[in-house]
Length: 144
Image (cartoon, rainbow, N blue to C red; front, side, top):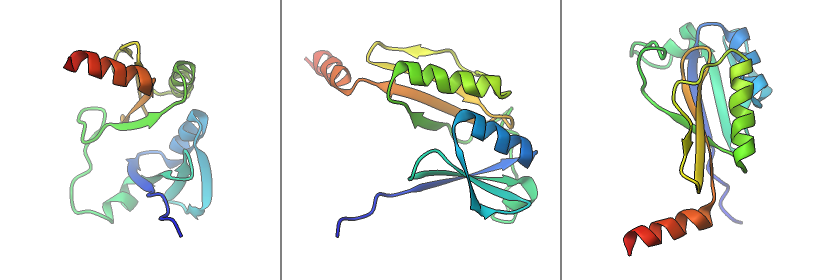
C-alpha cells in the first residue's frame, strides 16, 4: 500500500471566529464541521491543507507563549499554490473583497507570479503560480 500524502494543519488565532470563518470561505476554503465548536473551526483548501481557526482563548490552551499581533509582527508566511496566474489574481481579489489587505506588491518573474493577502487578523498568505519548465530553464541559464 502506498504511503498516504502528508497533510498540514495550520493553527491560527483569530479575534472574531465568525468573521474569520466567513473570510476563509470567501477565499475558497470549505468548512469542516466535524472539527468545530464555539471556539474552533476547521476550514480546508484541499484534501491535504487544513486551517484550524481558533479564538485566542482556545489557541492559548495549546501554548504558554504570547499570541503576537499579526498586524504588527510576522512569525510565518503561509503560501498556497494556484494553477494559473488568473487563479492567483482571483484568490487575492476574493480575499480583498472579504476584508483582507494586500501587504506586499505583486511579484512577477515571468515564470513565477504571486500576490499576497493578509486575513482579518493580519496573517499573511502568499498565493503563487509557477511554470516549472520555464523556471527550470531559467535556473539552467543562470547556472551556465
